[in-house]
Image (cartoon, rainbow, N blue to C red; front, top):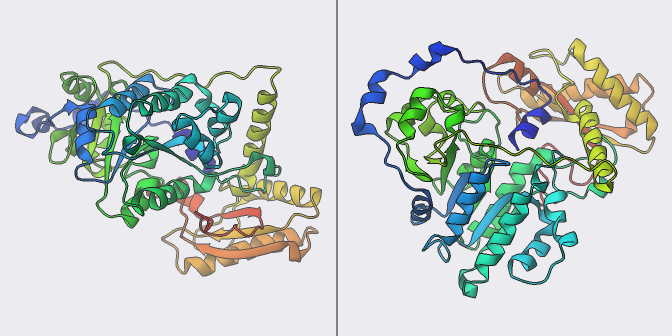
Length: 446
C-alpha cells in the first residue's frame, strides 16, 4: 500500500497543490495532434494479448476500488487468458498461508476461519484487505478454476512476506515491511520465471511505476533481474487528472487499455495524470494505461473494527508497535550531510531506543548506518554513523556487547528524487533486533 509505504519512511509527505496555471503545462500542440493519439482497446483483450510478448504483466490494483476488482473478474474470464496465464500474484496475502490458499483455489474445503488469515495477517496494518472485495476476488478465481481443465487453472501466489505477528512484540523486531518488494520479486523469480510460467501481477501502482520516487520497488527489481520481460499497465483515474486530459480520455470505452509510447499521453508529465509518487513522462513510468471509468473512481475505506472484538485489540497492538518502530527504523535518527554527526532532532528517537534497551536487558540490536548516494565513501560513512549511535547508547549505560554497528552505505535509499527533505532520510541509522536474517539487504531466504 502506497500510503503505508510512504509513512514507513518516517518522513512527512507534503501535499502537492496545483493551481489553475497547471492546465497550461501540457502543450496544446500535443493535445491537438491526432496522429499521436493512443489506441484504446478493451482492457481484458489488451492485457491478454500482452502475454504473447511478455511473461509478466504488472497491473496496478487500486486499494478499495470496485473497478479494479471488476477488471480482474473480466480478465480471468477473457477467452485465451486461462492457459496462457498460469499465476496471479497478489499483494493482499501473507505468504505463510500459501498452502492454505493453494488448497482453497484448487477447490478443496477450507474453513473461512483458516482462510482469512491470508489477508488479515499481512504486514499491512490499515485493515484495508478486510474489505469483502478481497475475499470475493479469491472466491471468484476459485469459481472460475472449477470450470477449467486442470492444466489451465490459475494459481494464486501471495506476495506479502511471511510475517508471524506472534513473534513481533517489540519495536526492535523486524516486521518485514521493509522487504515487501524484495519478497514479491523473489516469488516471481522462484515460482514464475524459474519454471517458465507467466503471471499477472496485481499490486498497488507505487510498486510498479518505473519512475516512482521509492527505490528498490518491485518493478526496479524485476527489470534488473529479467530485463524487458515485464509489461506495466497503470490505472488512470479521471478524478485525479488535469481536466483537459480527462476530457480526452472520456471518449474511450470502459474498461479499456492503451499503449502510451510515442503518444501525446506518453509525453505528458505524470503529475498531470495524478501519479503523485512518480516523476517525468508517463511513458517513462509505464508501458500502458488502463481506463476503468468515465467518472472519478471511488475508494472504499478499511472497514471499522468492532469495539469489543479480539481483532480490534490485536490491530491496535500492531498499530501501536508500528508507531513505536518509527524511532528504530523510521529515518528519525539522521545525520548532517557528509559527516557522522547527529542532527538535533535525532535525540528524541535515540532516547526511545535507549528506553527499550533498558526495558529489555536481553535485547541485542544491529545498528545499520546508511548514507545518501551523493556522499563520499558511503559504506565507511555509514559505519561511522552506526558506531556513533553505538557510542551514544554505551555512554548512557548500555553494554557494548549488545550493540553491533555495521555500514550499509547507500544500498537502501528511501527516496530517489532530489528533494533535500527526502535525501536527508537516506542519511540515517536503522536499529533492529539482531537475528540470523537481519542485515543491510533482504533475508537470503527470499
